[in-house]
Length: 258
Length: 304
Length: 63
Image 1 (cartoon, rainbow over the protein chains, first blue to last red):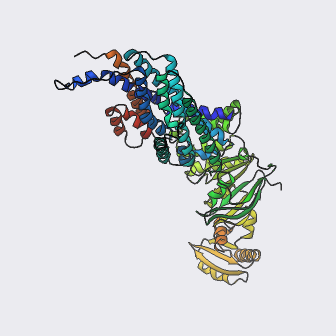
Image 2: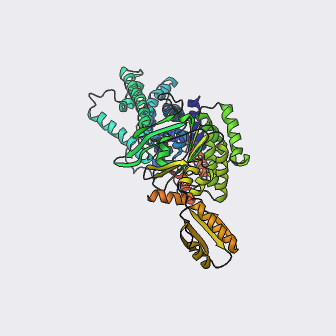
Image 3: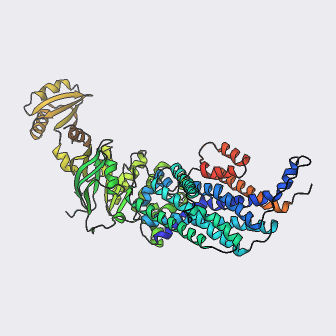
């Protein structure tokens, strides 16, 4: 089947360019950095000379759910940046180098071409996220107190939806621009604009995908998944699928040469 | 002639700039067609449009037995002038991958890849190396192999030998000669010797228009120069006068010690000169009737 | 001052080290990079975590 040929090529490419190694490692580092540094903060302060005598410095006691949210917050900034940068050339780079001329002059279906790239990126991102959050969950449990495995899987699942949207946005701009720099720029710009709009119109935009983290936190404190989380996830997934469908259509209209 | 491909009024514009201007042509099976033209004539644009990489602004491209809206890409093999590959793949991997994309089965693609690596002369050892380590000539040969892996009916090659050294050029031309048995080849070139060597038919393109087309022989006949080249083991000056005196001779000129004779009527001139030479025992070393070279022809057509 | 619990920090350091090693090995094996190789070697070694990431994203010649 042609789709699996294209998909396997993506997997092999990501193996040869070491993405299968470095992306999970980086996501793990981002996920566990804050839980660990916060735990060692008193020692760190002491080692750099400690606080002046008489200062009363109360370190907040973090709850397990607060700690896992620290991981998400790192992933939402640096993690998203890494994902955008690693995906910025997936189609645009092939068009720029000209290799897409050799590929797309074959009877390759554009939807196969785009969805194979989309899903291979999602596989990489979801796997990395799983390993990152698993490590974060492990540290949370030994350093700060119990967070159930069920809660971990819920966080993983719902946060994965946010990253799915990020990947889909990148695919969308990949199908428009030939320059990977522009792809990265517009993907990040879009995420920032979305976040600003969500903040300004927070009273109407309850289900904006940018609210996913907030609802995940609510889920952890309330210990149940509320309707808003489901709806927001649905919206994020729907936008992702829509972006991919539009990418395919735009790609079909595009001329592959020149 | 059953036309493999019929192109009618094909036009490609970018904004107000017309790159390809209403070109029409057709050609049959197992032909080698050369698309000739100076740089900027629109050769690459024409080929890319035929390969389906560009959308024609106007006009139609119709393959024999092509149903409406049928995807014709599996009938076409294409090699751009500067192909680039997934250079992290090995040559063999890339070929197999190309075959799979062209809807060959796994086994077909693998056997065909091995077969073609032999045909284009990439060794077993080299075929397992990353393409990033290939030389220009090897990449060009790999490029041809990927273009024919699915046995297309039409093979489109954009300047296939322009970037090659004489040996590589020779190899590719020989390969094209072989491939002609299996498919029709359309290739562009601005090196007229290459076209002369392998092509059966010519399309002369200038400023986006086809200004002349036909078989090499037909065109040669049409633009036949009636120049006789005469070399004599003696000073040619003495003979120039005698030849000038002949009625069938229009004029003569001396270039690098050889006498070039433009004739009014080639047949009569040939007879008269040879008769005179035999009678007077001229020490002739060369007597040749220059066939119109493609280059002369091209210059004349373009200048007209 | 309490002693630092190295068992806790070890995974962090190991992962950081692994990232550095993978980047360096790749740098040695790869034929060409964007910019001089020694510069990338320096970046990978000196800037922890970010250095290797920068190399993988910008240093590797894509195709």
